[in-house]
Amino acid sequence: MVEADREERQAFMNIQDVILGILNEKPHSGYEIKRHFEEYFSFFFDASFGTIYPTLSKMEGLHLITKESVRQEGKPDKNVYTITPAGTERFLNYMQTPAEKDVLRSDFLMHTYFGNMADEGTMQAQLRKGMEMKQQLYDDLENKLQQLRGEGKLTPYQILCMELGLVQYDAFIRKIQSVLDSE
Amino acid sequence: MVEADREERQAFMNIQDVILGILNEKPHSGYEIKRHFEEYFSFFFDASFGTIYPTLSKMEGLHLITKESVRQEGKPDKNVYTITPAGTERFLNYMQTPAEKDVLRSDFLMHTYFGNMADEGTMQAQLRKGMEMKQQLYDDLENKLQQLRGEGKLTPYQILCMELGLVQYDAFIRKIQSVLDSE
DNA sequence: TAAAACATGTAAGTAGTTACATGATTCC
DNA sequence: GGAATCATGTAACTACTTACATGTTTTA
Image (tube, each protein chain N blue to C red):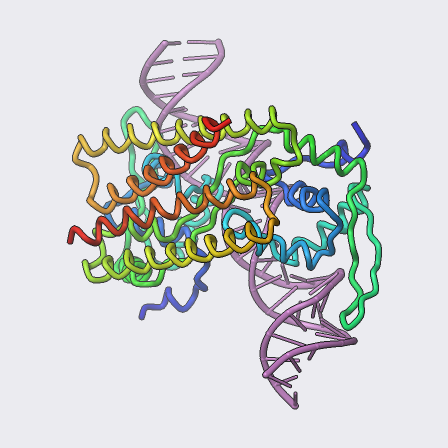
């Protein structure tokens, strides 16, 4: 066990472990990490620059990653971070830990739950809107999956991840649709 | 528009609106509100006593609810809160607002996403564990639905809410099962 | 007599966002 | 010239949890 592990308490699905996973594939800048979040797993994780940049500084101090300034043509300089052996060790340890319980916060389900206290027209509109939003998420995720898969950029595990998102969206949409149809 | 509305900025799925929804049905104490959270919508919302009690004090100050101390036999006194007309007005306004985007945080999907960086045995175990956990959630939610439905305690909207949870769990479980079977 | 359930509340700390601040370069 | 993209970072704030503090009553 290396030094870094003793200096840190573990929190729920620490953003540090997520960053280590991305850097374990190849070096990235903070900006690129944010784009990776948006591109690949916005449907089950996200973080802002206000979290990412301070976290990267902290992780450098813990010797989990190293920073290198890279000059670019036609773009500002960027700080590219590379994972250290201690970082890889911690990441592989994370992969062995049991996954924490998923956390869902749904304003749509909250509105639905109290549906009997609103008028029927309002609730019909809410249900239709909720379904359309999920349909949009489904379409976006499916397009992304097709595109990235075509480019050979995805591992079987990444494909499974996206497909799990798709089947859940699909089940949700069908259920709402069946309720709307029966009225 | 009443005074209270101007004193407060709206945040994502404010716990205040959730409490107003519960109190709009009938008066509750803070302790009972927490139990309601656990009993009826733990799968898409939760809050601790450390959030509930200060929020109730704040809402009393905003005249959205009123407090009454109630003596009980064989139990400590409790503070029972009742919604005011201003509170009902705000709640009905909430019901009309468009639902915010759902937020999911999944440590299971994060582990899965990086699956190619761990060994196959670890990942098999992670997938099996994730499926079992979802199966447990499915069973618990189904039992709760059957029980409460039998007691005639649920509105059609509350039933829909729980069924939406069930169909999503089911889709997830089937997908993982199909992957585990094909190996 | 100890644990569990009932009941309320506060203090300290964690995790995270939004807004601000700065600045280069490209595209329209 | 203004918006969009690239790029980094900080400060103020919000929301929330955990742990602590206190106490009663019931059940095993």
